[in-house]
Length: 206
Image (cartoon, rainbow, N blue to C red):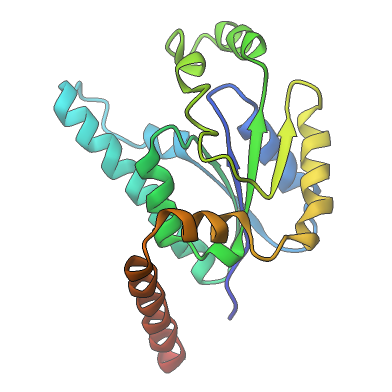
């Protein structure tokens, strides 16, 4: 059983990632895809009001669990469309650590700030200024396999472009390049060794 593919959509809140992900599930016809959204994971959390420190800790654990759920789904052969916001450097580092870089297609979802603000106000379910706060953070790593402008193209058009690009993923992938840049040699060796042991364990069980 081979690993599944991971289409990783990164962009600010209200940039159109979820809409593109839903369209991808409709247009992709070469596998069984699952849409994993960080917002969906956040929605699972208890509704009890949390203090600032407790909330920060809970959010960090949520993100870390989200990243590992992506890895687990792909490890057993599921194809996954990920909808995420890499607005903190540690989120990217954690993803680079737990996700197999050769299986990830990293897609930057861009949109002009004025349009993001308009969408945010129209939605009414996001804190005011959230997209503006994230705007210069989510793409700071500066490396993608593919980029889409959700202000100039419809979600369907973005999804179609991703579908057409998917068979032509670059080698090395953006995740591989970023991993080399952000993870030290010792850390990469440790992660690779752990992944190899997990693969051997799975083969032995099979």
